[in-house]
Amino acid sequence: QVQLVESGGGLVQPGGSLTLSCAASGVIFSINAMGWYRQAPGKQRELVATITSGGSRNYVDFVKGRFTISRDNAKNTVYLQMNSLRPEDTAVYYCYARCYTGTYEYSTWGQGTQVTVSS
Image 1 (spheres, helix red, strand yellow):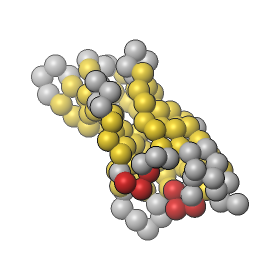
Image 2 (tube, rainbow, N blue to C red):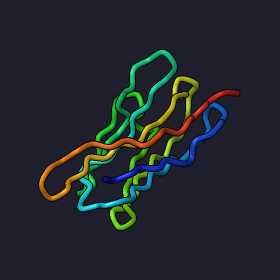
Image 3 (cartoon, rainbow, N blue to C red):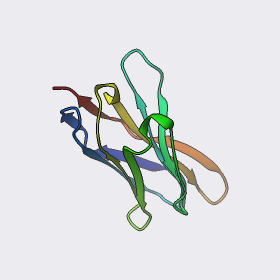
Image 4 (cartoon, rainbow, N blue to C red):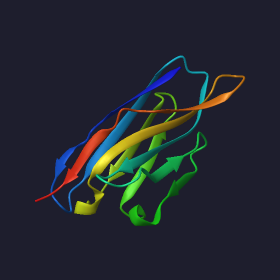
């Protein structure tokens, strides 16, 4: 099984930037899509951005132009560069990976990293 570990969260002022990282480890045959979701207090978990193994990116509207997802396949790591952060971006950010064992696919999640945008 693949394990995901996020890092890079923290407290930042409105308008500031943060970069999140998520490294996959364990028994890795191949990782297809990777991405980031977030969950604010009292709200459901929502998609932020995804990236395929080939580099195709998808963003939700509320982060387009502000966030950039990237991926280093050699390091099995996905990044989320967040610029122009707003208080409404405050949430726990979760890394996601769609993994393939050679016979079946499964999804796995990281433990989450807190991002707080506040002055």
